[in-house]
Amino acid sequence: MSETRGLEFWILALFFALSLLGAGASYHPYLQDSALSEVRHNSQMLMATAIAIRDYTTEQIKPRLDPLNEQRFHPQTVPAFAAMDTLRRLQERYPGYTYKEAVLNPTNPRDRATAWEATLIERFRNGYPNPEMTGVHGEGLDRAVYVARPITITQPGCLACHSTPDRAPATMIEVYGDQYGFGWELNETVGIQLVKVPMLYPLEKARQTFRKFMLSLVTVFAVLFAGLTQHPFADRHDEPGFLGQRDEVGRRDDAELRMLPAQQRFGGNDLAAAHLDQGLEVQQQFGA
Image (tube, rainbow, N blue to C red; front, top):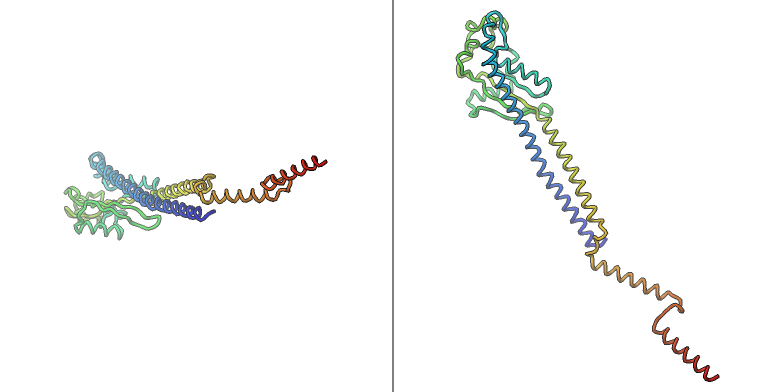
């Protein structure tokens, strides 16, 4: 390989390497952003589903079952209970997808806010400017995108069960007691609706897509590189090398010709000697 060919080889290798790095650097963030967008979309859908269940319970279930609460309290008439219980069934099929109505002072102990959830509630109570809070929570396999909305008491009817124990239905007191879930006030933010959607599956899907993309790109570049460096006409433009090879062939032919036996040569001296031999032969004939 000549110096020119060697230089072109490394320039081509550098071009392919930079192209590969550039494609990977631009495609990887795109896949990450697409995965996060998918997670956010799923979280919004889960929140909308919970709100739809709450609305349906308030409009269709509660009016029909409220008369039965006089004999026995039915938690299915509580919109929050209906939404959480329904979506808990979804979580059994899709682990990591959770919905919870976390409250600082809940009637049902299972709804009590954790320390992290309590910090979100306090942010809303302290005047968080947006009606919705979004972020990322957790580490490793538990890392998830969350969406939180405040639970604010805007309907006076809610205070019938949560102001003082003596105003609450007796059947509810029989089930949950009179220690928790009271003392709420109108326009008070008492908790949050919280949705969490795992990031593991979309991010893993993005990683697999990126690996396949890079592998296919490396394969294509390898085939092109091999074809460009091994093509039989790749040296046609190397004119000095080509002419040098032709002169070398000519020199080898001359050397081979000089090595032929004297009787097989056909040069200028051989023609002169042939004419001289013919002249001597004629003189001898005339002398005879």
